Structures are given as structure tokens and as C-alpha cells.
Length: 367
Length: 92
Image (tube, rainbow over all chains, first blue to last red; front, side):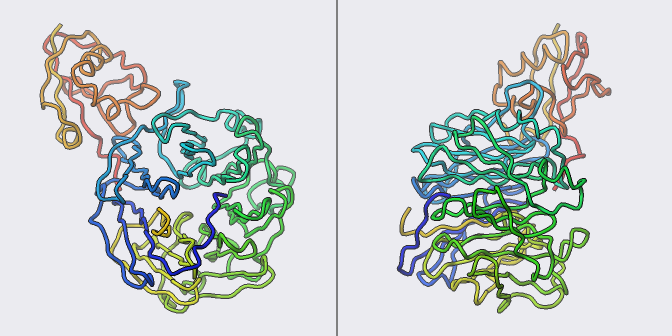
């Protein structure tokens, strides 16, 4: 929920493309039509997530190795050079950090959050120099019902409220959504009203499998989520959820994105169903609503409309906060598509990459 | 008792350490502790944050895989070779 109002002017954008073979850093032209790319950073390492902290301009990268474990890296020169930073770690002697799935700048100066596998939330209060786990989340009674998704038990989305440092919204697979109003000291599950096909109906509140969740930066309480069985909107911090995706071609999907200047606008990439995990008809489209989910527009101009036998992972749809809004989509087949007009038109800007785990962008004129 | 620890090529690709290190120890745990006193940068590559052997790292005593990956209690004897190697089970 970090406030990211549009600049109102054409801007260059930065783009971090995380892949299962390393990280690329992109920088656009002023109209965001042409891109210059770095060499591959962390080649051979699985980059699960990378993001720009717009407050400081620092870039953060969560890289992982099957053999050697997860590492967090930081760049203070726009991605030209990187240094290894402190990596969150468990201290109970039982759990071991398997990977870092998201990094989210906090509301307070120097505050950064990290979501991990196994599911846990870490916070740094000193700009990533040290980390501690917010254990109240994993000690919540509902954690008894958490179960692994295909990728493991993962906390992968963190919503931070720039206006209220005490308010946090988190989600994972399959942890469900939780809200805290005391900076993570206590948590309330927020899964009532979700339709889940994998649990008995009276257990639906305990451990929904959320694939992505966004809290809007300008309208408190407005949440959007894509879960294993549908697309939902909430207007009250998840106390009630409204299914909004009945007209979309598939209730399954991973990725979603919001427009930081329009609480009623959300983007999804529907996939056919959970045993397919590809766009229906092998035709890739992003779907946009601008009326809080009442109607949807299929945005496919420039996207492959035949033979797209790929998926789009949970962090692989991103926006840059520019005006017009730039959108970026990475595929499991290593292609990156970009739109510089809110999704109306798309261009393929990279090919031949490894599976893309995340795309995150930001306007370069504010960093 | 002196033993030699042999660090695999896949490990040394990431850490500046010699291929062979002579240390003293009567168990794998003692040997690893002694190794990390000399080369602390190896620690996070070999052990996880619960101080167990990483899932996709193997340690052999001569030709035998160690049995205790959690506490590294396997005994070592004078002249043993301790091989620390990346497993082929990981991959991407």
C-alpha cells in the first residue's frame, strides 16, 4: 500500500526481470518503447524476486541456489553492481529458510519486509542490515491448517500501508490472507466468503490458497486477490470478499496487478483451470476492470493468440506507476511483454529467457 | 586427530577457499567447526539456519555418506578424508 501516485508526465521506467537463471535490469526510453538491458546478473541462480525501493533507489534481489541456499543482494547504483546483504534467517533451530518470495519496502524509514518459504514474515528496521521474524503470524492458531502449494508453503504477498505503519496485509499459499493493525504483533485471518474447492465448506476461512493479493494505496480497505479458485475484491480489508471474475475465461490464475492511481482498476491473467494452468485456447490476454470488477476488457493486442502453451507466475505481472500506466508481463517460457498504455497494446521486449518468476517496474524520475 | 577436508569444485566456485584443508576433529561436527574457524565464509554454503547440513549438500567420510545430517555426529578417525560436495539432486 506504499503510495505511488502517477507522475503525470512521460517517464522512463526501470524494470527488474527475475528468472530461474538470473536477473536482468532494464531501462526504457522516455516513451517506454525501447529498452536497454543489463547483462545477466546472478547467472545460474534462481532469482525469485527483485524490486526497487523507491524511497532510496536501492534494488533488492532474492537469489537462491538448490545447493547453497537463499541470499539477499542489494544494488545502490541502479543494478550495475551488487553486494550481498544480510539474509533473513530463522532462529528456532527447527525451520530453515528455503527461499525469499517477496520483498516489500515498509512504511517507516529503513523498514523492509520479506516473505519467505516456509511461510513466514520477516522485517528489517535498519534498511536490510538485520532481520527478525514477526512470529505472531506463524504462531496464529490457523497456521495448523496451512498446507503446501505446488511450490511449497509460501508467504508471497505483503501489503504495506504508507499512511498507517501499523496496518499490514499478507497472503500466501496456502496460508490465506491475514491483516494486522499492530505492525504484526497480532493477526486476523481474512478469508470469509471465498469459494474453495479443496476444503470442507466450514474450513474455508482457515487456509485459502491465495496466489496474489494487492491492497490499494489510496483506498483503505480495497483489496484484490487471485486465488486458486477465483478472482475477488474486498472493500473492508477482507472482512467480506466479492467474487468478480465470473465472466473471465478461467477462475484459476496467479498474477494480478493494480493501478496505483485508480482503486477500481485491476488486472488479471486468467488461466483455464488448476489442472491446465495455461490461458484458455492458448491465447494470452490480460483482463482489466475499471469499475471494480463489474465489467472486464480483454487486452490482447500484441500478445500471442495462438499456441501459447505457457503460464504466467504470481509475480510476473507488474506496473510502473507512470502515466499512462506501464504494464509488464513475463511468461514461464521466458518472454517479456510490455504495454505503455495501460494494457491496450503490448510488445514483446525480451525472448529466450528462463522461466520468469517476477517483473517489477518503477518510474525512474523519482528514484 | 588430523583429517583432511576436501572441498568440491562446485563449492569453490562460490567461495574463496583451498581444495584441501587439514584440521583436527573426532566427529564431522568438530571437523566442520574447525573448518569454519579457518574459513567462516563456507558456513552458509554448507549449513542451513537450523545448523543442519543443507539438503542438497553431501559429506562423505572417505567413501561413505554421513548418516547424521542434523547433528553431524558421525565419528571421524585419524587420516580420514572428509569430502564436502554439492549433490546432483538439486538443479534448475
